Image (cartoon, rainbow, N blue to C red; front, side, top):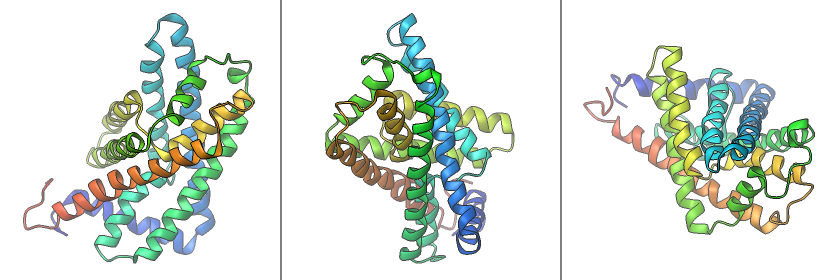
Length: 264
């Protein structure tokens, strides 16, 4: 690694904090993973609630409002130091590339993080489905139609969209690392995440609370089958790792491992 790369130094520090947390305070790591999906669930819920109202005003407005409001979920995750599986794909891949941890340990950390992201997503999605905003929604509401559309996507589409989703998410994380002003960080995260939310890309962790909210609010959508949900989550996970772990993590670690930093 080029010692002059401030970005890579910041990533290094983040990797070390995650390793220390996992090695010495595993319950706290689990708590942070659950909290990450609580913030995602809240961002998803308010985004869908506002989108539903927007569609009543003008067709197409709901998608714009959804994308803008969903973006605030990552703001909460970043500022509350929660553990998100898709950003850890980048961090842990960099750690393996730098020989700071072995592949098996990286997989253990990532697996634990994603599992408790799932626990948080299902639990909070269920609880939010019991709140007033999601009671008595019609079958053609923006929430149900959006989730049904996700479950109807083909394998190749899910993988490609998963790649771009995690490129966007980790771009937002990396750019925010390089900004010193909090207002600038927030604006950056919101408008970068807007890209993947508006384009409807597939983010496996974000789908945990989104699928759970729609399922419990609908009382069991017809589109929800074990095969459809498993298909989406599995191939979104693969795409997310390619985008976040290989393109952003391995790619930038390699690009900065040179005599002249690629970014600085």
